[in-house]
Image 1 (cartoon, rainbow, N blue to C red):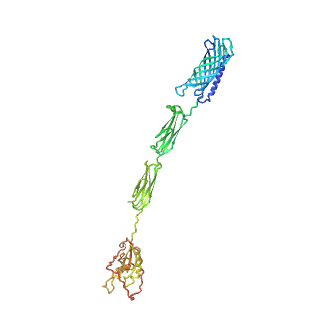
Image 2: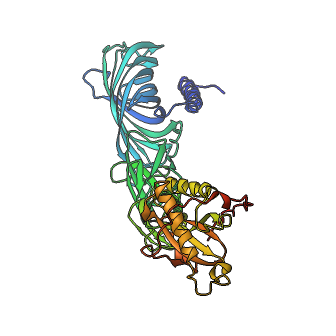
Length: 559
């Protein structure tokens, strides 16, 4: 089958269109967001006037254009047009093909009203194309001959409307262009044509990678507290679009939020675990969070611990006192949460006064022995602690009651003629008595004279003889020696008689505070105004006899 020249041109155009479509289809896969390709297949009519003085004639044909949009509507377009004109009256028969390229600006005048996902849109574009036009197999009536071909620069400027009702498929509602060619012929070398076209369009665009969804992470610091301690919750957003408005919101018990941080008032919270929620939304002002991925939520938890009770220690200084004295009490309390503390005190006896961590214990009215002092501490939450200390109250010192002390005794057995005389042996005893008085200047001595029963009975033949008071005389003579011979103050020596059946004198030392009559009973004071000391009388030589001297009676303490 023979293919005409027109058919060959159309076949070549179809092949070019298929190739470009395939190229755009391949090119759309790696296209970056914002870059798109539009393919249009159109049917066109073009008004042209070649024969001077005669009305215009029309070209009929079609075209293919491919526009690549790469930045804010700006792009490059390539176009292939094929036209044919036949006028029987004018005997004009011409075939023309044009290949052009140039810039195009596309403005989206209208988007769908059902939100960003609505594919409907109306585009207005303007373009300026430059290229080559070729006419072949042209027949003009001037000579009736067939021109095999001619070429010319072609300029095409204009614009049009594209309406997309779906994401990819749309209509070229109208395209109007001014076309200028300079194809030589028998009449003129310049053609000023008006071209109108319409058709279908196909939009190739790599789907933009959707932005990652907004994320939000929350953390509470610190995670464990006591009531009243501060808690700060921080929200950390991710994948926010800096071009959009951002809103934060907070919720939870006692939570106050501002932007990415929130604080929690924990003073009134009971022990337990609490959760704080946060959310973030981004978008245009007033439309934050309307689209998927434009909002996120997070939460953080913290624990309120129960208050721990205070502790206390207690001490007393001094720990041992006498009746009526005082001791300083010191209490040391501590609260694990540094709560305010109040101190109080009590005692098992006596009294405690004071406030704060010190007090004074008074032993007035307390018995001797160990007294317990109780120290108490209470925090502002009513929790208490107790500690004890002790104070020992010693018994008051009681000086021992002095008692009469028995000293040495004097025997009066040797001198039968002078049975009341203080002899040399007796002086040795009295010298020791005098020494005791000198060593204890506040002490006194009581000299107690004794008499034997036989000395009280008159001898035979002397029935009516006067009986002397030997006991009193012996006591008075002993005092006389101490006063005169040893220089003892007479007021410190008292004389008395006892009831013992003996020829002796007992000497008793009476310290200050001692009561002689309580310690020694059965004595009678001697009336020194009646009984006088015996004057010394020498003894005749013949009467001196060597007599046995009895041993001195040892001193015995009398209690």
